[in-house]
Amino acid sequence: MPSAPVLPVHPIGRDPRVRPAGPSDVEVIVRLIRELADYEKALPEVAADESHLAAALFPTGGAPAAYAHVAEVDGDVVGMAVWFLSFSTWTGTHGIWLEDLYVTPEHRGSGLGLALLQTLAGICAERGYHRLEWWVLDWNTPSIAFYEALGAVAQDEWTRFRLDGPALTILSGTRVAPDATK
Image 1 (tube, rainbow, N blue to C red):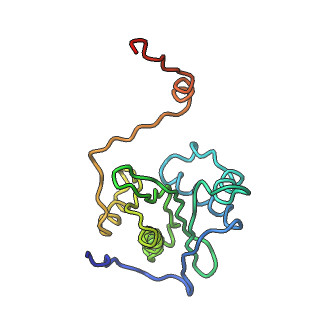
Image 2 (cartoon, one colour):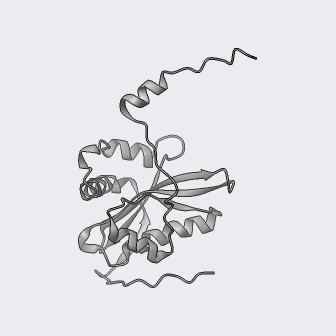
Image 3 (cartoon, rainbow, N blue to C red):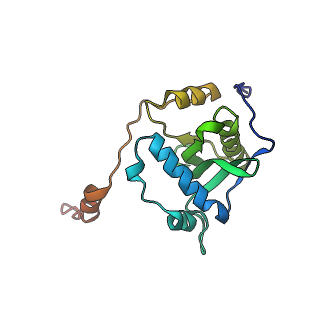
């Protein structure tokens, strides 16, 4: 069993902690998502607002589409992890797909990113999930180094595909004709 990673931690504040997000955190989560998108040079792509996140994280009926944990320092939310369940047909089990992990620049290196990931890894262990997965931009070398220090392995053999906009609309309107030879 591999040992826990030893990473430099520079504590900030008097009371750092990670907790599940609540409805009152939606506004700050949206702000952090926008900060992350700005860092990733993709701010114009963010269309989600508080109503979208509230409906996804805290629906009035049915199961959430996504979940979130926040990192606090002295009662202020300074980081977040937004995630959802995945499923592997190969393992036959769920996993966690980490959609967004973000800690504000002034709190990076304080151990909050590690604490958020440890929280999600703990959920995986408790529930018998076999994977915790996420994307990272190839130019984000500080994050890549952090993830590699944790023991995460890049899945370079896979190529990501996406359908959106007109291509998705066109595909949604296609119908496959029944096989006439049967």
